[in-house]
Length: 542
Image 1 (cartoon, rainbow, N blue to C red):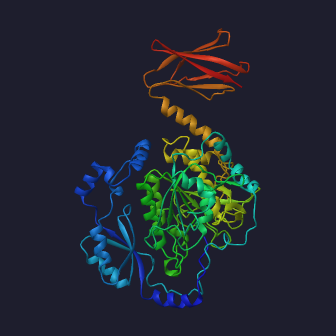
Image 2 (image 1 turned 90 degrees about the vertical axis):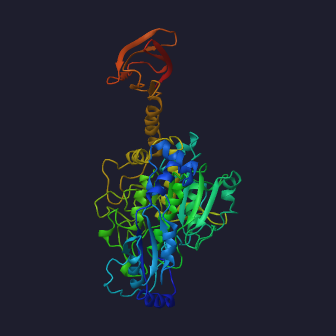
Image 3 (image 1 turned 135 degrees about the vertical axis):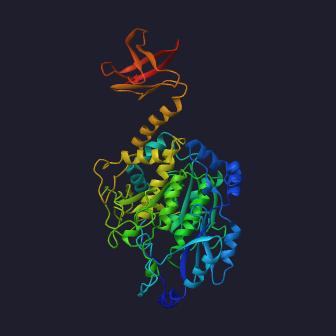
């Protein structure tokens, strides 16, 4: 992402202040075993029931990372001389602070502080000087013409998410959280009237100013949010109009620092505790107001930065963290953070004709991992503005929420499947999966294909315990039979509509496929007999 525009006067003030203050992560001692044990024995005290249900459904362990950090210790750090606590992370068991180098180092004298990690990776490095902070949203904020619903259709049909909508998978019962700089107008914008009326705008919080207010310091989030949640009858439909949403502000419009990464991780933790499945992050970090804090390419290995560590923890906790690749394709080049993390599902930008767009940051990360994961429309993407006007904007900021909404719609079809299974199905549906590139990653996904793949997996998982299952259905050449745990062999037969048996085969768990390519198109009745019980199924031969 690009930098924020600041007044030149502020630069001289900031440059002077850099010699006075530093930012750092302060790590706390291990959480009290008694507190952890009590919390894990009664997880409703630290998580909502929705979060517990999501974790249980996916087999995600509730562990010590879910337990809040020690607030008494946090308060003691905040009260220390010259120290301000800006953010906290239960996953990292750390607080993000600002103060002088000396005062931060003094925190090591506290008995519960085990380590300090400065944002300045080399405190002896000269700060140099920057003339001003560039506009992070420069590309997104360019003048935009008005587009009609047809343009919104292009970005939807490109990834075949309309197929999901046609099958009534619109994100229902899936909770999504957005992280951005602000969502002005969200409480009055007609594009969210249905969302508000149905009680699916679940809440909002500004982690920078610590207030419950959706406005923040900019309108970037108002545009990104629309690509997933917006709905204007006859004009615009987002990719997940049936999902529920939390809106979080983690971007500070007044400065660019790693503190924003810490705010972001804290928001992820809040999202996880509330049962969120999918998050969208149309933000990225690489260079900061203080050049000593910059991330070099070697730091973007998916493991090192605060944001990358948070993204990986969110993956461990069962969420899908959809993240913009960044708009630095013509500059720094590589994806920033958290887009570099393996725990992030990173999205680059293409145009209406599915061509790579010059500004889209490319991969790989410095560990050699393929990034971005997939691509979606990011040049002249249709959005709804903060006042309800349908328009367009450009940037990977919009390819990300288009995809995040599609992920939510997809997951609503198979909510018990784990995040890694869903992510991999999307990758495998993409048009360059077998030949990924640094610019496109695995390419443009086909959410219709991903849905069919996941439904097959879902059928197997749900039916395997007690029932046989047949798939695909309709079938063209070969039908598969999924066995319950109680059976190892069976007799499979097919009858025509006259009741005449036209095929019979002994099947087992290891020999569970039947060739039906010789059958004429039409409807048939299949029967499976096992353990003295016969079950019948209607199948369609294409």
